[in-house]
Length: 405
Ligand SMILES: Cc1cc2nc3c(=O)[nH]c(=O)nc-3n(C[C@H](O)[C@H](O)[C@H](O)COP(=O)(O)OP(=O)(O)OC[C@H]3O[C@@H](n4cnc5c(N)ncnc54)[C@H](O)[C@@H]3O)c2cc1C
Image 1 (tube, rainbow, N blue to C red):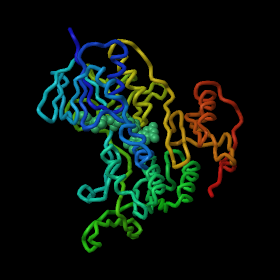
Image 2: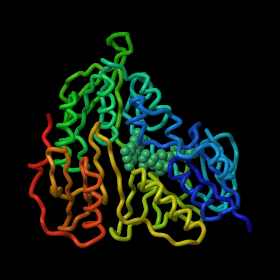
Image 3: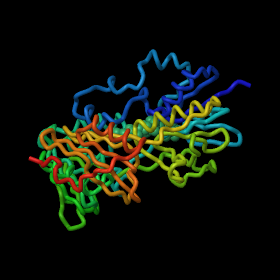
Image 4: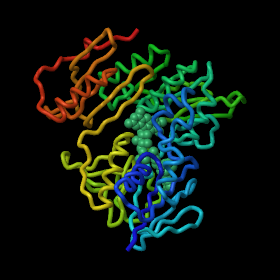
């Protein structure tokens, strides 16, 4: 019987599944369904080079038009899956099309959380898609007042980019530091750098509401009301408070959607259904738990494992995940998984070159390594600590790490 593999979601994960299937010799029917009306593109530059105007949308493309044609796939672009029937093996699209499949791959990513009451406010935005980035780029001009709500990777990266464009940036976060997922020490260094570049950081502060109109100047300005009663005027408010798995379309399928789509260690969610990328929580044998990561390289690594599994080839996911973030001129790279209770310890610090490396430990074991402007050094640590025996010496604090100014 010939097969028909339907991939829902044409981001990094969905495209990589299709590419790997063809690479491994799959030559039956392949269909891609993507809600966005763009060819597959890469998201990380949206908050960095693209937003800054240093690269165009062509440079974001994950595959050139010829390579996409060579995939020999039926593509439904700008079409959203609205439902699936796992018994009948069909997927319904928002234009009424019903696709029959032998195998379904869910790669629908995540959607940004929003602040209540902001959906209709012009100037209250999120940053997830190319369209979002284009709209935000059109607003960021010298002197423009931007309030960023959230101090994670997206919020801080966008704050850096907006500063470089001459905007007045205030970042509000309920956490004690920005990048709190990297721990207090690294978060404090990141916050110092961002403040030194000109941002106003309001930590341990929550946003209660964002308002427009109602006695405010009629020029479209917004007002951000904070939990200490402060009112911040802004032309743009970016909500960057994390994301939720995009699973509405498969809500009634019976799949386990407790945190995204729950899968085994090779991405199987149910008979005939795989999931990968940001939407998928894969079982991690070394941790004995399901993990859902929102990292670019992890999405394509999982996609390749799924494609192989679909063709009966067993592969395992690299047990060491990897992600990076560009904080203005600073590049942070992390290998491994930072557990919520992990303690950070500095390994090497080089003040002259503004770089340091460190390790995260939980229960005495290293779970992740970090490099701040030190991509080569952190690779060495990765080899030593996450894939080999651990050396003994560990420096006690961030005392030798670069100081701001
Ligand atoms: C601004 C930004 C900056 C980032 N920077 C970094 C970084 O520096 N480092 C890093 O490691 N990671 C970064 N990431 C995260 C990284 O981009 C993601 O991990 C990666 O894009 C995940 O790929 P994915 O294919 O799983 O999901 P996505 O890229 O989200 O693709 C999912 C696609 O599925 C589509 N879709 C959703 N529902 C449906 C439906 N029902 N029917 C059809 N299509 C649907 C969506 O429209 C979307 O196009 C960043 C993300 C953003 C938004």
